[in-house]
Image (cartoon, rainbow, N blue to C red):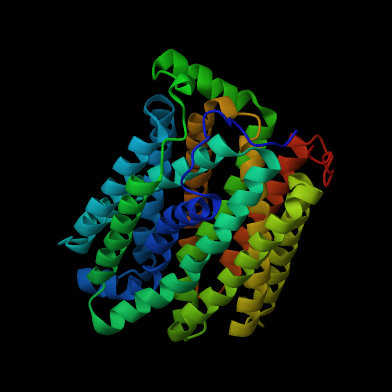
Length: 413
């Protein structure tokens, strides 16, 4: 049954739902800004540090995702013990410090190290968003709140490349990191002043090897948790492949780097539309029905795009249009798969979001780096990756659901 979760523990007057959604959306946006605003700056970073292999510039993205993935193993677990609020504030503070460290990095190696640490700080916020929402909502209501937050969050990938390009017009690339640190300070103040603790003291659990084994076992033994985490990881891998490759595609395939921000805006807009549709329909139709059909669409569009790439008829219009449709499906699937993965593990929500998020991010980042390093001056490697990721996610869900797809759950009471 879908109903508000843990009402006694989360009966707080502030923030109201609108402010709450706005705050968690901004916390989520730190990841998008930290990745997408850097994409236009990759050539300038390469020039500054004398990077001769264009594909090596992708490590600026991959390093962030590595820190983002590893840190998730710890953030949620610590929040189950000490509460969401202190771990969130420390994580955002860490993000601010290493954003500034990246801004002043004297070498490419130190920049990469700062990016790993910056990603670790961002991970704390991203994991705890899921835990905080799960503290207050469950099931379809959780999926709805996350979808509404994603609608606001999607302003980040629309704006981030343009912000990055704008900064590059008036200042060196290092100022992008200063801007990221400024966003972090805003979040730190807003959360510090307005976000109360959502995990009641009587629901906190100790941190010990035995407790961790028990919590991990709870998450890993749940078929739904494991299956939908794996499916989400494959979908994330496709997204990471896109982020690693897109700057070189616009520069080397289409010879139109100035249109990167425009294309990003179109793609992000369909993701926002997908989240809006999900927020309106998920309570009525259910997470499985929408998520499964969205994954089928994601895979079909990936296959179509691969066929176009193989035919040699790829254009900037076909690239942007099909990618936008693909990512609209991704948005529909991701929100529902995340909620389904968390649905049965609310008693260890922090550990669950840590374990699920770390696995999905590390596997997704590994796929993204692998596909990105295959860039050969065409879009074929990227969309071969998309299609294979989609098929792999379908297999994971078929196994999880024992072959029963698209079923609609009973309407909530």
